[in-house]
Image (cartoon, rainbow, N blue to C red):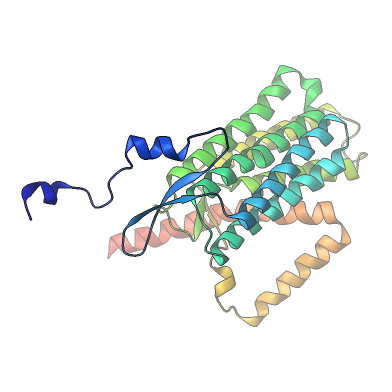
Length: 283
């Protein structure tokens, strides 16, 4: 083997002619570089159908939520965001189950999340109650959207770096559920705060900003990604039953209560991790 052979990379980049051939013509095509278990680079065409179809359905749900919010159909807008959150959880599991993970799918999922959990909830809360505040209401809604974009961008660059057991910052689907359920409680109980009173507008402006800041914080939230693979004590089923009863009794209040408790749980998880780290450093 000569010197030039040693200097060649194991996975050379595709030649310009190869790239031109891949995108020659007028058809829309996805070409990705994948690596086999032996480390060889393989060029693949097309996308995986099932996970990307689920992601497209989530994108449609977020888009419909925006249309419903601008048409003052707030309950439909809220349910569409919840459906998008459900589909967002299914597409990743489907990709892992079918071994159909790809860079295109990851980027497509992130863009879908931005619309469904970054833009749709902000438009929902703005159309419902923040519009009378003028620029202040617009600013609070935009803070939420901007923080969702920051959260998703940070998540993309930290894939494979942070512990999968935790989310760093509140995940955008959970922030969207928390903000949407807050609006749902007000829609379902319009007499609690009065018809768009100053107190209610201030409250929702604050909730929008807080949800946004939680997304870009360093607070650690349990991700539940490995929860379904582990056995738990039987008594854990008791609070789960109580949670289901709470949701059955009053769906908006039940979901809001669970979302609020989860948002607060991140501070407990962060404090516990920091205490363990300090204990290790003292040894």
